[in-house]
Image (tube, rainbow, N blue to C red):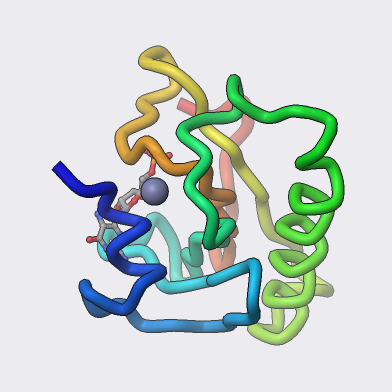
Length: 113
Ligand code: 5GP
Ligand code: ZN
């Protein structure tokens, strides 16, 4: 089975794109957990956080900075937001292509559920 987020990155499955460049794609989550819920992914397939290497440090920095910029653009810079990488079963990791969640626009509880 092809990877869902590789299919989205390749334009073969539609998504509401919020940002894209040569290495990064950001699109709105299909099941939003807040008024803003955007997924920021590397175009290159990386199965999970567990597969990151030192070579990916710049890429991960790009994901985080891009998510921060999207938070600012969607008006969350002042009121706040959350960036989340899930990994593994306990965290409910369900799509096995690294993705950074940007969630905001409502009061977020802590600790998370
Ligand atoms: P995870 O639980 O793996 O960290 O997050 C996967 C996320 O992908 C979930 O928030 C889920 O709603 C989202 N998702 C799953 N399938 C699709 C899809 O086909 N399109 C979009 N835009 N988001 C999806
Ligand atoms: Zn993939």
